[in-house]
Length: 195
Image (cartoon, rainbow, N blue to C red; front, side, top):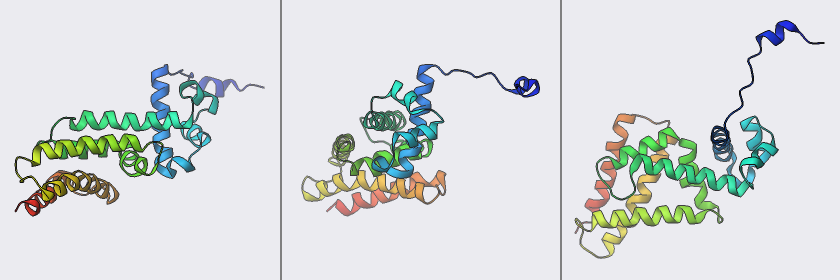
C-alpha cells in the first residue's frame, strides 16, 4: 500500500543528460581508482561509488580499461588547462598546484598510479617527455650543454611533480607559500647544475 505523505515529500527523479552522467561516472571512477588502484578496482566498485548499475557504466564505457583511460585523459586535460602545455614561466608551478588541489585523486592517478600500469604507461611517458622538452628549452639558456644540463632536465620535472604530491599528502600546508617553496627547490637544482 502506498503512503501518500511519503509520495508527496519525495523529490521528482531528474534524469541526467548523457554528458552529465558521463562526468558523474568519471568522478566516481576517479575516486574509486585512487582509493584502490586500477587492478584492485572493479566496475562494481565504480558503479557503487556512482550509485549506478554496472549496465549504466557500459552505456558510457566499453570496459574498465576504457573507463580508466577516460579518467586519465580527463586528468591530463585539466592539467593542461591549469598549467599550459608549451612553456615554463612564473605561473607554471602555481598552475600545477591548482590542478592538483582541484583534482587530487586525478593528479595522483596520473603521476603515481598510471606510471605503474603497463597498459597506461604511454600516457605518463608522453607527459614526461613533453615536460623534459620544456625543461630543456628553458634550462639550455642557463646551463651549459653537457651531463649536468641533462641531469637538471631529468630531475626538475619529476622533482616538481613529487613535491606537489608530497604537498597533497601533507594536507596542502601553506597553499600560498607552496609554489614559492617548490620554486626554491627548482632553483636549487639549477644552481647545483651550473658549473
